[in-house]
Image (cartoon, rainbow, N blue to C red):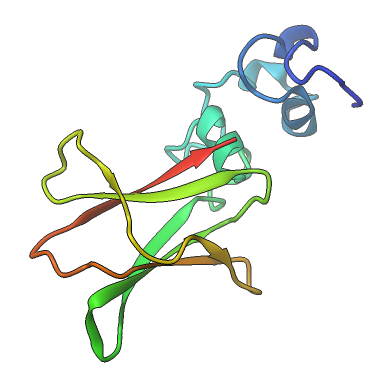
Length: 138
């Protein structure tokens, strides 16, 4: 499917999902192509799977996040996620109380690694508790 306007093709139009992506996965079953649908029952709807770069028809294809301490540096944490998409912007944020006041993580920005995982560094991870979230934008 060659589509110069990414959200105007037939039953895939005007839903904020790229038509070529919807065609790739749902050409034979467009009834499962809506943004709120979760055809693989993995808890991540099509809108999220498109943004995260995961496969909407494979329940094992998920955005995966993890955090690790840095040996010898108790106030530093490495933050990992996969998959990485070069056409997305990623930003780690944190909160110490799970309140709406999320702040950017201070440290190294997300850096893709050879195995498909991406690593960032939080250089100020010395709070008693700290919650993280990954913002993805296209």
